[in-house]
Image (cartoon, rainbow, N blue to C red; front, side):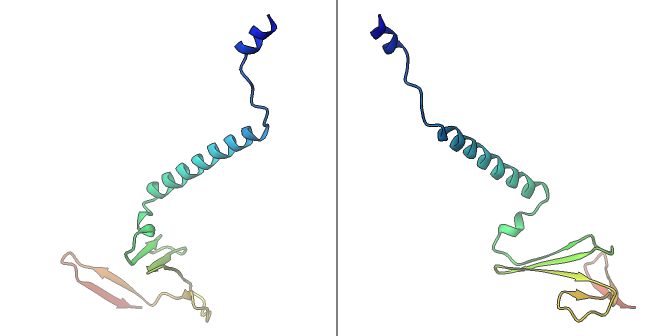
Length: 109
């Protein structure tokens, strides 16, 4: 009778770390899915392409940023009103307008 019970009962996994590794795998899959969802939601797919690009965040506002990608290097430029000699700061010197035919007109202040 005892032999029958042991045949019917399967051996249980006695390694407690297997549960932790399974949880780690699930967390990694969730993290990758979250990153893909955020990149596609905010239209940041050009960050992963080989093309050079320039992107303006919050145009015309005080917290405006200009982000450029040249090869593998990504640069951020933040204009500011103060005359700081920092390489990533600047000040507004004029306004550019684009006409319906595609021409751009620069008006200095």
